[in-house]
Length: 203
Ligand code: HEC
Image 1 (cartoon, rainbow, N blue to C red):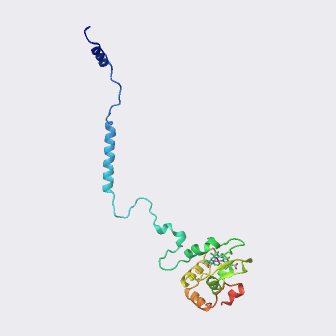
Image 2 (cartoon, rainbow, N blue to C red; image 1 turned 90 degrees about the horizontal axis):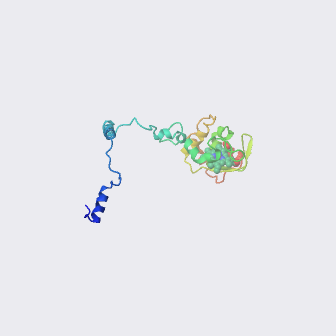
Image 3 (cartoon, protein in one colour; image 1 turned 90 degrees about the vertical axis):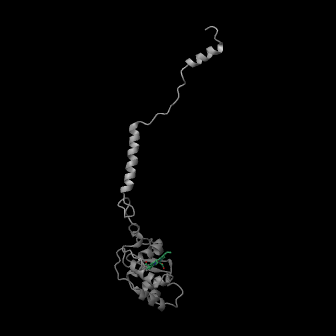
């Protein structure tokens, strides 16, 4: 023993040492492995039994047309012009979606004698616009509205018919023929109407 070299003694000492602890690989608990397997099988089974290519009963079933009633009005129609749509797009910025306008600035269309009154005057207002004083529901407005002659006869008929039928207004529709006739009758006019008399004169 004594004749062992120092080096050998040292090596023996090292071999007696315990290994440094280290993290080993531990297998997943079997129950967990089975659970994963079961989930994968259920997923495959679900994909196989779920019908594809047919109308699905799952998820949000609202269609595009159901999501758009506010813009398209009560009667969705692809062919005829929709007056409410034109109103929202061209008029509601000033006259407001409520048809009440803005006090002192934009006159109301709800309950307005111009909207509910003579279809010819209303059509004239739309075709040529107004400038100067105009009395609406006992209040005098001093604004200006450009004419809407760039809208087609059908579009003017649709939007005037719409404003005559919402917010408590309940007047007969204005037809396209009347708009066409007024456009011809007032061909010579190039400036907006200046007052109520001019509008009523119909030229
Ligand atoms: C830029 C703002 C503006 C827009 C947009 C506008 N208007 Fe007007 N409208 C006015 C103003 C201002 C008057 C009043 C003019 C005056 O005081 O002489 C008026 C007056 C009227 C009148 C007669 C007065 C009344 O209240 O009944 C009608 C009808 C009317 N507008 C309908 C329409 C329609 C329909 C549209 C959309 C096609 C439209 N307006 C878009 C500003 C606007």
